[in-house]
Length: 174
Image 1 (cartoon, rainbow, N blue to C red):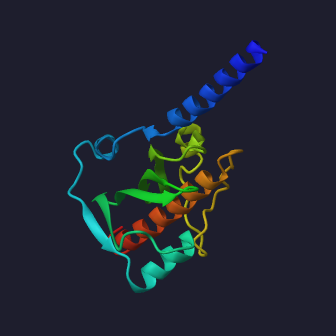
Image 2 (cartoon, rainbow, N blue to C red):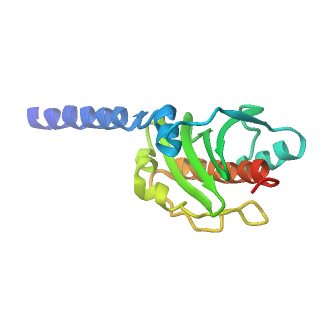
């Protein structure tokens, strides 16, 4: 009986420990921008109004939490730090976009208790060179991760938003 109680206590402890390990800051936004640009350019902002706001709403299924979205641009390359709710909490993700599509996708801060597998490089690498189709879908298939469906969907949708916004800010200059 004592052994069963001991095993139960250890199992519960491991479950709670694994959940607390899932949450965290994997890279600060400043580190992400420094890694992307060396010296990050001054941030700019794009306003999600009228048609652009409607397109973003179609992609996400709801309005984005901010009306003015910051981004960093150097030539035809831009970086975006965007947030989307997985199941209950925001996932902060960094995106680098260039003329060939997504260059990099990196989960920076994960706040959920489940679905943290999206933080791994193997997940982000699936997005490299993905572009938007005419219907604002990705032109690449992104594999789901068992137990992380909502996190996968959140990062996938917000990557579509990053591509849309990049196309919008670079349409006349690149």
